[in-house]
Every structure is written in C-alpha cells, then in structure tokens.
Length: 194
Image (cartoon, rainbow, N blue to C red; front, side, top):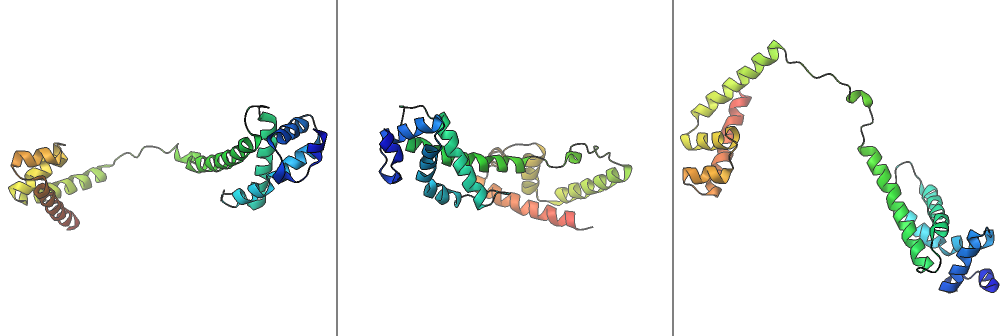
C-alpha cells in the first residue's frame, strides 16, 4: 500500500491505489492529497475553461475545482464506488452550482427602493385622457363591419375563445383569424389618429 502512494504516475493508479490515497489524505498525508490533486489537474483546467462565471476569472475557477477535489476526498465513502468517477462528477456539479448561484443572484431585485415605491394614484387628468381614448376606440369599433365588430367584442370584451366566436358566426377559424387581424389594424389606426 505504501508503494502505491509513492507512485506519482497518476494515469496508472488503480481503484485500490485511489482508495489508499484517499484514506491517507484523510489521515492528513499532504503527499497523498497532492497526488490526488495532480491526477485531476488537466480535468480541472479543461472544465474551468468551459464556464464563464461573472466575477470569477480562470484562476478562480481552477481554485474552485481544486477545492471541489478536497471536499470530495472528505465526503467520499471508502469502498463504495470508483473515486475517480465520484470526483469528476463532484467537480462538474460544483462548477454548475457556482454558475447557478450567480445566475440566481442576478435574477434577484438588486435595488430595495423598487419594492418600496408608492402606488400611482390616478389624477382627474388621467381619467379624462383614459375616457377620451376609450371613447375614440368605441367609436372606431362601432364603425367596423358587423362581422369584425362581433369578433372583437367576443374575444376582447366577452373573453370568449376565437374558435367559439367563429362557430357562433358560422365561419372557419382561419377566416376569423384574418378578420380579427384586419379589425385590430383598423382599431390601431383609429387609436393613433388624434
């Protein structure tokens, strides 16, 4: 067992050698830990280059990979699986967790002042503007042909599915889609005219 620990050609380490190295590293042997770290050196460099994590440069990611190995040495259950497989999965999972943590951080609201904004109270002027806009749209809606008007009222005011409105008007769904598009275009033009 002592001879397998001194074997520094990490490509030829067997499962038993790795188990012995892990046990020795857990017991505080720094040479064993260094051999384990050297075994995964190229793997860490390869995978550190695959990830771009905000506020972490390449050296930080390599350091994170080595910390993942040290953590794996202490969490590995001796005799359970192949340590090499366990360790490579741990490295990849820790890189993914690091990236996921940063993504989650950027999804959070950074400015607490946004949460404490007061609700906007509509003024009389806002209500007059809204009334005028609604009146203009309703006038434009009343000028539409009956088929277009019925589709817009059915879908947007009565909240019925377009398929149901089309069936009521005894037209195909495809025709209803085209009629709705045309009617909305006319309403947009009316809304943009002042």
